[in-house]
Image (cartoon, rainbow, N blue to C red; front, side, top):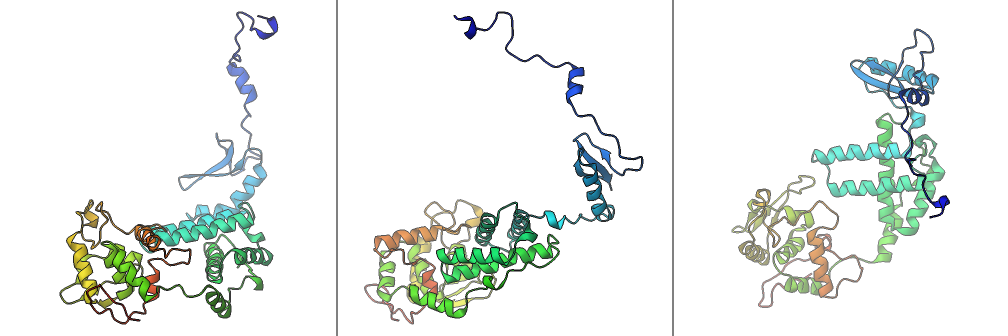
Length: 365
């Protein structure tokens, strides 16, 4: 083997271990206090620190004692009083504002005051802000030109209704930052960040056309659907029930003998009592007769269960009811990207009566 490609015998390729003296020579020495009464001490983590009310607080690296001292002087009144130190407004970034808003909303989800689906919508809003403004952008540096650019970008991609919602949510993000003391003044959005007017919303709806099922389409859905989807479809057109309503409906809310359902809205608790058509009562009885055994005790009281004994309600955007409805629409060749979904049933409650017949319900507008 050529000598240039070989390792000399007896010589290790591993670096030699440093002696304790050599280690001490390569490690930065702990700095001394700037003066005897300097309020901070050099912590082993290479930061200037001070223990206040039993808690260790850090104010900056060894290399910047002046900056650490300034931070301590800015925060000392709050820290010695046992309060959380107010952040440096100039250092608050767009990412800080977004994270604080999402944390606040997550606390509401944990307390049962907010739906996880709504939290996901807020997450989309904050993701858009971070993407368009930059995560390290100072929040106080954001101004009207930035928000106008965001609105123009949204308007090119989305309809007026979604643009309106996102504008309102973005305003809420910065309003929360002000109320949480992350900002010391209100954010200026400028006239270019106004929500679309009612006229614009009407024109947008007219351009897209109505998203409603026709009576023949509803009849086809009822005939084709299996249980318990058929019963849920009838509840949609009969009582205006949505995905969450059907997925969380308890058996105790049903008075099938009297022909009533008494079930407050899950999101708001608003009382709701609806008379049931004979066809709806019959479909619900049929669904209950074939209802699988629940897999979990928490789902034992639900009226409708999947074939595996689970709840039809999921705290996600694409719920099981939506998926099954999409399959049904595709089977009937009604799914053409026109926005029709299970929720469309409650948005278009135009059916006045569904008299019984040999061929099933014959809904009359």
